[in-house]
Length: 250
Image 1 (cartoon, helix red, strand yellow):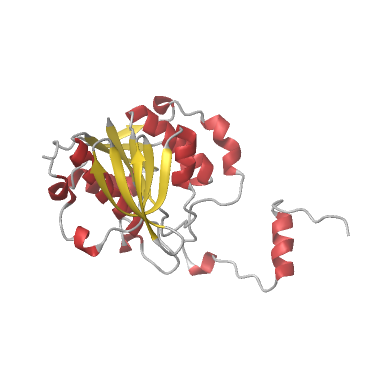
Image 2: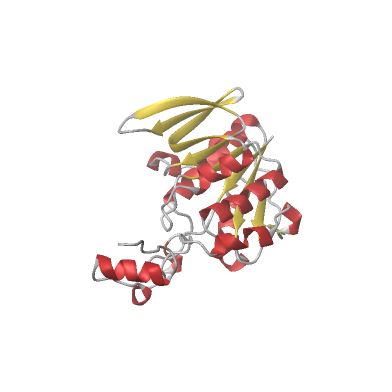
């Protein structure tokens, strides 16, 4: 059994420097939970990111320092241009490659905010999934989750394999190193493995249409690049020009 921890560098928002935060709050929750589960089960934790080394290697290095036994970066070209489902397919292929039975990821990132990638990965893998998780514990072969439901807290027992979508960890949990919480000696960190599409069995040609859809995951990187529309009519005109909507007969 292996635990996969999905991480991504927090991208800059308008008026914010890239150096403001390496991991977003939910990704920190995924790292804490993944290391805790791996420690409780006595298995390896593999940190996974997708994108260029200049952006993602810093995040993966952090995961290795805090207890992950391996770090993998999917280095295929064009990943930043995919929509949420294309990215989910790429990550699912990587998870299959590392043979992970448990996947932790952020419930939603601070830049794209859709919360769709984790559930899509679960669907592609045929795994159970839980969203909005506040905390986890391990009981035998099950993961016990406390999640935020419709204005109330719920407790669930999840049988593996599963994708667990984490909310930010409590402040008290961040005060301690994840490897100390896990109760398991850290494996000597390995170098970050860069895998291309062929190595994970990913056909980028099949994903090409996912680059042409709306909802790319990259945020606007500066206020001067943002477009402010003055009316609903102007919005409709722009959407028509981009072939995203079509005006019907009147």
